[in-house]
Each structure stands twice: as C-alpha cells, then as structure tokens.
Amino acid sequence: MPGPTTPAPLNPDGSRRTFMKQAGGFLGLALAPPFLSQAERLTALSKKVEGVSTISLKVNGTVRAIRAEPRVTLLDALREYLDLTGSKKGCDHGQCGACTVLVDGRRVNSCLTLAVMSQGKEITTIEGLAKEGGELHPMQAAFLKHDGFQCGYCTPGQIMSAVACVQEGHAGSEAEVREWMSGNLCRCSAYPNITAAILEAKGQMG
Amino acid sequence: MNNFSYIQADKAKEATAAKRDDKSAAFIAGGTTLLDLMKLNVENHGQLIDVNMLPFRGIEMTKDGLRIGALERMSEVGAHPLVKENFPAVSESLLLAASAQLRNMASIGGNVLQRTRCGYFRDTAFPCNKREPGTGCPALEGDNRNLAILGTSETCIATSYPGDLAVALIALDAVLTLENAKGKQRQVPITKFYLLPGTTPQRETVLEADELIVAVTIPQTAAARKSKYLKVRDRSSYAYALVSAAVGLEVQGGTVRAARVALGAVGAQPWRCFEVEKALVGQPATEATFRAAAELALRGAKPREHNAYKIEMAKNTLVRALSEVASV
Image (cartoon, rainbow over all chains, first blue to last red; front, side):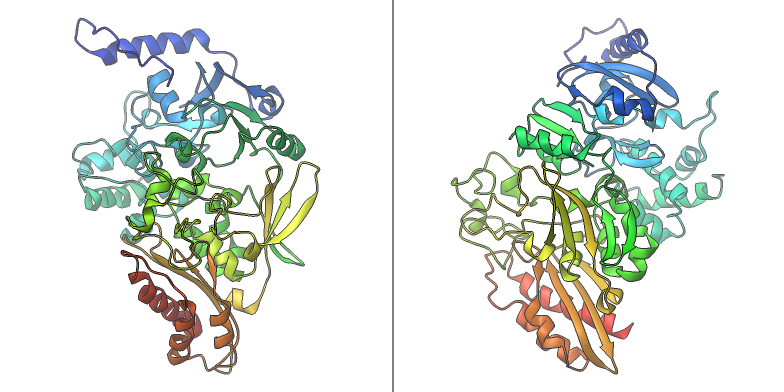
C-alpha cells in the first residue's frame, strides 16, 4: 500500500503521529487543485487512470487533493493521506462499521469504497460533525452523556452511523435503532448506552 | 489488494467492450463484494470498469412487471413503495440483508453476483476447486456447517450465492436483462441464470464475459403480492442466513391456487422448490398441507458432518413462512 506509511523517525515529543500529521497537512495543501463538480467529472475522468494520479476529495466542506493509486480506499485516503484519523480501520472488509462515513449524506463503509470513485461527492467524517469553535454535534454530546463507549475505537463509526440512522428516520424505537445500527459492532458491548444516546439525540437533531 | 487501472465508463458499450478486451477486468458498481475479495487476493483484476455512470437506474411498473435498474441500491429498492406493496418478499430479502451501510452501497446487479462465504474459498492458503479448479475441496471433510446440502457435487459444496435477494427473485420468476459488447440485450429467467457446480464450480452463472446485468424484472402476480422472506441466522441481524425461505401464496376460499417457494442457504444455488409448489396447489391452506409439502423440498439432500441440521431447519422455516403468508 503506497502512502506515507514507511516508519518515520520519532519527533522530539516521541510521537510518530505528530510527524505524520505535519507531513499529511503539508502534502494536502501543496497539491490541492480546483475541485471538479459532478457534471465535469463525467468528461474529465472518463479515461483510464493508471498508477499514481491526482485525486480530489471534498471532505468536511474542504477540497483537498492527494496523489494515489486507484486501489487506495477512501478510508486509507482519509487516514494515511489526509491525516483524518478519526475514521477507524477495524476489519477492513465492511464487517465492523468502524470506518463509517457519510458520502452525499449516506452512510457507507469507507474501507470498501475507492477514493478515486469518491471524487465529486460530499464526504463527511467524524472530524466534520462538531461546529467550528468546538460545540459538539448533539449525537456526540449524547454519546458522552450516556457513556456510549468503553475503549472508543468503534465510536467514530458508531456516531456517523447514528447520525445517518436518525436522518433516515430509522430511530423510532429501541428495537428499530438496534436493527438499523447492526452494521456497527462494539466489542466492549456498549450497545444499551449507544441505543440510549441515539434515542436522546434524535430529539435534538433538527 | 493488487494494483489495477480504473476506467469510468459513461456509455454501456464502452464498459462492455473494455471488459471483452481485457480478460482480467471486472465491472465495479458498489464494490462491496469485489473489493472484499480483492483484499483477500481471492480475486485479482488488472482493470476495474466503473459502471455507476451508466443509465441503468429506475424502479417502475411495466407491462412485464416491476423493472428495477441494475444500478439501483439495495436500500432504495427495499424501501420503495412499489416493491413493498407488490413484492414484500423482495423488500424483506433486501432489508434483512447485510447492514445499512452495505445496503446503501451494493447494487442490485452486483447483489445477484455475490460469491460464496465458504471459508476455504475466501482463504487462499487452502485449495478450492471454485477458486483454483482442480486443487480440491477441503470443505467436504472440513468446516461445512454453513454449506449446501442440495445440488452439490464432489468438487464443491458451497452455497455459491450466500445472499438473500436472489432467493426471493427465484421464487417470484424474475427475469434478468443482460447487455453485451455489441449492444445486444437478452432476457434470462433467474431460474436459469445460476449453474450448479458439477465438475466446473468456477462457472457460477450463464453471464458471458462481455455481458452486464442492466435490469431485473419481476412479474406481478397474486402470489408475489402475498409473499414473505423468512431468514434464520445465528444473530438476529447482520448475519448470513443459515436457512431462508421466500414464499408466496394465492389462496381462495381456503384453498391454495398458486404457490411460489424457494430456499436460500441450503442449495449450491438459490433453490426453487417446484415440487413443493405442485404439492400445495389445490390443497387446503393448512399447516398439515404445508408440513407435507415441505418434506418434498429436502428430498435428495446430502448433508455433511456439520450441516445436517439444515434439513429440519429448512422444513420448519418453510412451514412457518407458508403459515404466516396464509394467515395474512
């Protein structure tokens, strides 16, 4: 898998992640071309893409470009190229839901989505939920209030999935929430608290 | 995942010709099966042809029945009022499948081409006649709890199609529209689409190399309108079926006038039960009738060490599904 994944020297603070954050941010800014609209995309990209090419992604309202091969998934593009490590890699096979993001408002498994096919679409990750200034999305606040997690690894995927679950109108009852959230596994088994959080946040989402 | 080139097709001929000209190519729509298998190195393609821009969309009633564009997603089709009203088994088969995320991604055309969940097929450390013809089948004497008991062969006992939708489509006599690189379309009843493993388990359907599924059409019948998909599984949600049944009944004055019956996860392919249907027609719509007819469905079943439970489970699933549609 390409991308800045080779072992990096540790920073003075001992954090490899800090190094990767800086590297990713720099790369993203340096290469951002104008964003292609959906209509333009048809003609602009109706050709073979081989090897590394420029891929423009609109993530949380901002267009950023990466240089990557067609095999790079949306999840890897977010985490390894755009430094958005909120979306988690659990199974990498669409079985656990930890990688859930919204694409054009629909929840999808970003691990089974190709970055090259995500161009021209609105991608929302956990990093894009809170308001500028840090006010949490009602779903994030409800997860905190109800203790909807233990280890927290599945939480970004749970929250993104939960936001969509409410928006789809599939959070009418506890049973309905459990059915429509079944694509997000929690090995700490925080399900009762996750369910309670979703039912509460439903009333606060406009 | 091996590297590949990517092409976004905006005309059907562009897609089918590219597939015809490159044996290593595959179409990609939702990608939920394809990328999963490519990450496992079970499938390796040199080229992916993105068909999502092609105009094979829409859900509309036609004189032949409900026509569903092959690129429609599972979530939209499952929730569509025309589907829920006229083909409840189809709606249920879609909404009981996978997860909300996967249903948002997976296309109808791709769904009917899902590949087996047999653990030996999915793990390249093992031999597998379906993945590498002639290498053998460890499932015969191995972990075969989820595998087939009908239509199998000595080379393969996989439930080749592990999903749900095709079970409902087979019960309700759906027809697939395929289009090839010459732009020619042909209609294939889904009952004739899948191939049994025999000595060539790597050949799973009659789809030719340059053919793309462009639509599914389901005829409107009284039995389809009163149909149901019942899915039995290890977990109550987000699991493949151990056994499933798609049934439809037309009952008049307490007598069965028409019946549609198929089983999932017991056959090498989704399993239409014509003998059960014959045994139901003209009989009173009672549990005794359903019980007697269900016996016929499993005649000739060849269980292995870990999947004999499917025989009783399939009969009970059929009886319950038939009883429930009869009482509606």
